[in-house]
Length: 144
Length: 284
Image: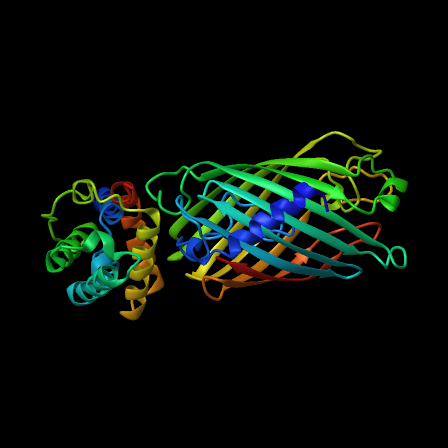
């Protein structure tokens, strides 16, 4: 009986702990599943370079330090996708203030991001999970 | 074809001729087109606006669909214009080859539709449970009423009204994007209107639910199914619900192909009408 009295609460505590904090090895953070720093840097670089050169989207990238944009975007994805970073850039609404970005520019950038994720060999699930996290930013980005 | 309908179709086609107005919305977000001409699945309207136009752009799409259940062929072709991702105008003609019921019998009808997006962004609002919601109307005119009238149909033309809610869940199903639609339609149509409107059993509007759900296997391939409840207004011919399973392939931003298997139930006295469905769509 004493053993049962000990085991039952312990098992319950273990079960609760398992629910609250899934085993990090069984389910690594999205950032790791995306491929970590290497892949995310590559994906961000392709997306930003393409956005800054395509005539349909380059308007709001003129006179912008692309290296800084890439650095802050990687940092932001790392922070949002459980990579353990802290985003040190300005809030998204402030970054895009006055740019009058259109829905078309937003959708094209998302298409470029999807393409870059595909080019980098990121899986469908990881791609879609990242887009789900980023999607609500449209409110702060599309101001036109 | 009435002047009103002709000018609507003209407007839709004219919009096609302006490449500068081509839309930039994400691929597949304009949906396929129903046999009635509006953006949706194959038989259920979705809350999305046809084509790829954003809120600053005009987009649109055109389609032809053939459904071949056991004893019939249904052909539908039409076009839709999406204006500022807010208003959709559509026109389609449906033709049912019913030679198996009466040799040579063809039943044709025209459908002119308008859809207004009321609120919501089905794709981007991932932090909200709210769907994109649209309201629509379809004015339908049957061009071959002799037989439908003889079997008890009351009217040759009528208007369907509907409310449609569509939501996309990114990574919503096993890591794949999922899309779901619930549509409520008020209708008096018999077999879409191909057998006229209203009947000897019921001559008033019925409020009918319709559902459509799909999983995006990739960004441009959707696998899904639909179910559309329908009224049963005519004593002479029992009418069943429509259902289908479909595979839609958005080949690129301009061409889409949908293959489906449709279960159409009893039509004009012929029971258990099942068959293939093929739709080709051009989008801009």
